[in-house]
Length: 121
Length: 106
Image 1: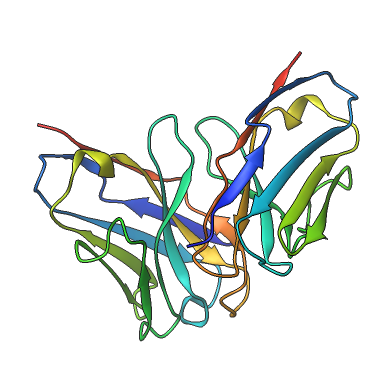
Image 2 (image 1 turned 30 degrees about the vertical axis):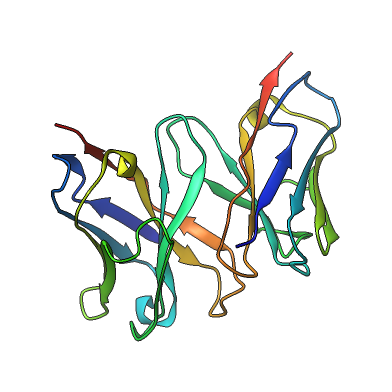
């Protein structure tokens, strides 16, 4: 059974940093691209970042480019999101998500339960 | 960037109703269009991918159609568990989501 479990969310001051983790199990982690998607309170879904299975290719939404860094440790089956220079508008539930297959056109077939990040003074 | 526009943003319907939600892309995305269902406090769930392919385990009352820029999600007979918010997403380019359609009980 595929499982994705996020952790690392919490309250942080504007300008601060936070690192999210997503522990994966039930599939060959290194074979699949992984992504982070966020949802601000009462709002819709926003893709944040993606990383290839090997970790060699990364992609970011313009809203987080230069501030967030996605990475993965395939030996630990874990996905990360390092978030720096956080802003109030980064407040959201952050989900990690797995691509269905191995192409860039594939949808997200599994999602974690989400972890809440609140940026506030 | 590709923009995804869903309509309506809200709809009120009764159990047994046929419901249609539309999604329009700002440029052609071929058939790289996916639909998700989200219930309050839960993660999104994949319903339809590649415009019309039903995800494993999803009831057959859900169907999708379209190509290019115009797409439709149809629920043939709305069930109580279908009251939720539905999102389209393009997977042609930057994985942009539509704004969502909240389906509520009339």
